[in-house]
Image (cartoon, rainbow, N blue to C red; front, side, top):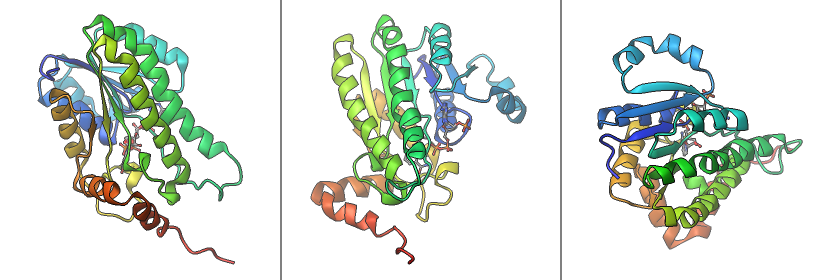
Length: 252
Ligand SMILES: NC(=O)c1ccc[n+]([C@@H]2O[C@H](COP(=O)([O-])OP(=O)(O)OC[C@H]3O[C@@H](n4cnc5c(N)ncnc54)[C@H](OP(=O)(O)O)[C@@H]3O)[C@@H](O)[C@H]2O)c1
């Protein structure tokens, strides 16, 4: 599909990579962009000038992707979309064993996996009605290898990778293109304490829009992710060991 004249909905659109998706979609001529986010009022105050400038294209939608009610309302309102960008996600920087209980791990699954699944289930009929369209799932290199400082996040993103493959198969008959994006470290709030060189959210967003037009399936856009993809193909066990070295030594 072409981005020009498309109608898109982006989750987590108020900051980070989600905001970059909205900006890139506007720049590349999308007809309409539903910018979905949890806190519309704060965003309206901080971005009033930009919203005024793009008022014919951008419409704000209140959306917490863990709320089935809000998802249902969004699906009712945005019934003209042909592109769904599942970007919203959380990373609690928690381990699998180190945490006192399962609440952090469950919370990441609830947003990253079940939230995204609920969005796809709600919007699949809309995409079908509008000719197939495309779904973008923002995964991570942590979908392919567990990064133990982000142990439970990595597990939720691995689940999301499996989901991506599954819905790609299930929605093929309706002509919906499903694209998986595997970023490395990106300069957003989420990665601010991550001790690595980071790429810009704009690079991820622009690379994703090109990949939609090229009908690619899994993409590694930034330099870190591209190198990761090569190294991972050569020796996945060695890569897992490298990331394990990021764990602090146990203090007794
Ligand atoms: N930054 C990286 O290094 C990196 C690397 C690989 C993959 N990713 C993935 O890229 C995506 C975007 O992350 P980012 O780096 O832009 O992080 P970010 O700056 O922390 O932004 C996360 C966005 O997700 C939203 N969000 C969180 N929980 C939500 C929920 N329940 N319902 C709706 N929206 C929710 C946040 O909304 P609020 O403002 O309301 O909290 C925010 O808009 C995530 O899926 C992340 O896992 C990021």
